Length: 90
Image 1 (cartoon, rainbow, N blue to C red):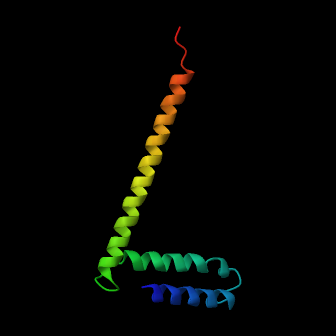
Image 2: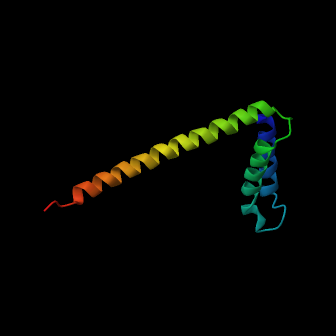
Image 3: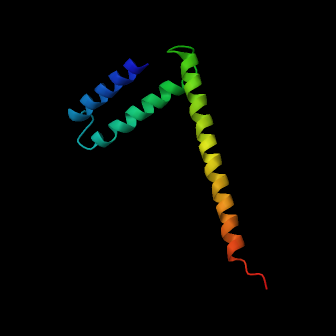
């Protein structure tokens, strides 16, 4: 897999610097590369180390949920703390 991605990086760099696709298209080659990598990683076919790609995506998604959950809970607790401090009891 890394060899495929390094080849794709080299190919998009070459296409970018030779200005293939017109003068204004050079800004879109990194987007093409990122799209290619996402398509290869999310491809459901059992080729190109299917189990490894599945493990990578599951671990990335679970890590993102874990980090977002911690951020969200921290934000809620901080908001409650600010609310209780700003409340004035008569």
